[in-house]
Image (cartoon, rainbow, N blue to C red):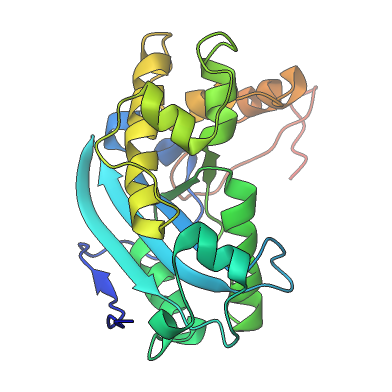
Length: 250
């Protein structure tokens, strides 16, 4: 059995500090929004018990790839046989791989200031948050987009009976087929995301804020509350909050 050395590769321009997107940034056109599409391989399905074995991430803006990150991760345990069968990642492949304590800061830096995207985002983001907590690092307030959730909103059941990544990869004729390896699956998700964004663009959805509003499980009350902030000032200053009779409340 041959053992290939793991690699951690990162190509990305400097980014602003970790921060939640402002209202102006939320209203940035989708073509100008930076997304980091991430996929993980793990030892199982429970973030509190299992560990990350591989991270693949692709940074995109305006339909163009501007950086990629890919690395195996030593989970500190042997690989379960069913995971080996699913992913092809063996315990031997992980010999010499960096531990998550080394990898996670690089990923957080890579994703800084971007919208995180994942196919079945609760799974991947759940593992990343659990790893961040174990490493005693702060979890940045990322905006998160789930392509499963978006696909269920955009595509009809007739067009897409299944929203598994493999099924959507076929539907959108992606350039990289998903293989249950992190970078391949992240690249496939990029093409799926572009296909879905093209669909919503035809429906008049052109900013990330509009995309969030378009997603399912957003109530009319939640959408209405966003409108309350529409006319708030965007610059520093001294402001007076007035009541119904124009009295200063704060």
